[in-house]
Length: 113
Image (cartoon, rainbow, N blue to C red; front, side, top):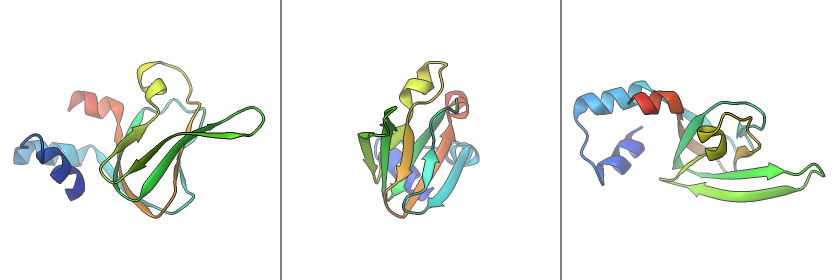
């Protein structure tokens, strides 16, 4: 969590109360290489901050071919932005390409923050 707070405070000072509120709505996870963080079909609206490691954002065609759309490394955000702003099922996957530390946020919680 300290990685995210440091990242934010480079641009915007946070009060102790705001930092605590942000911690309260975050889910810190350590993920292994190859672990899927988000799969297609759910309508889960999450945003992911990469504290360390590397993630891949991709989709598969009906023929099974993978198309990578984005990589996310330390201090980057990643998520299914289409599902985030439209009420449709996800068509993408987010996978860890290395051992990674991530911080997950449900979009609704961030909106209220």
